[in-house]
Length: 261
Image (cartoon, rainbow, N blue to C red; front, top):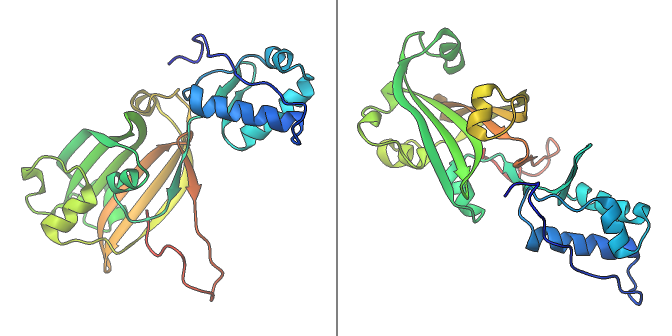
């Protein structure tokens, strides 16, 4: 649904007998409207129109909208308007596969395979994987979706010697599950490096965002014992994810999560 299409009218009136102040009543009316009537990307009516409809000052109306922006229910675009925000998936660092994680969240995972091939390790890749330059590796690139919407671009590299015959079968739906079932490789621990980046024209086309759109780049090293099994680079849409990182004080109890994603 295009954000500039005609929008459903905001339903609800203020109750002068309510113990809640006007801005809180407006906030809950708009919250209900955003979550039950609108789709992500819908644009709300202008503040002037909403203020007149509720018969309140624009300052009161703006206070309600500010609160919903802070709660990530709404999103302001300067000079354009206020929109219903896309719900964000909390990106918890665990060693689960993407499909396992989306199913756990009640979403339908899907993937478009971009590359599934054996390639020689480049100089940069060999350094990251600590293997000889030119050594054969499996390259598995996918556009990952949830409920039909693009979420991230994932590119995984695995030493070919660890997964003989991997290319003989179709690309796996769940990479980690396939590694477990076919090769008894159960990823035990890993390290993630997280940084921001901007979408190139290639990334933008696949993820359906503008060139330069902010992305989360996560570089992962996943191990069995001391051996690297999977090296991956993932590009996440920043409007679809929020980062959740459990913390602990050194020397205190064990962390809540002891593995990654």
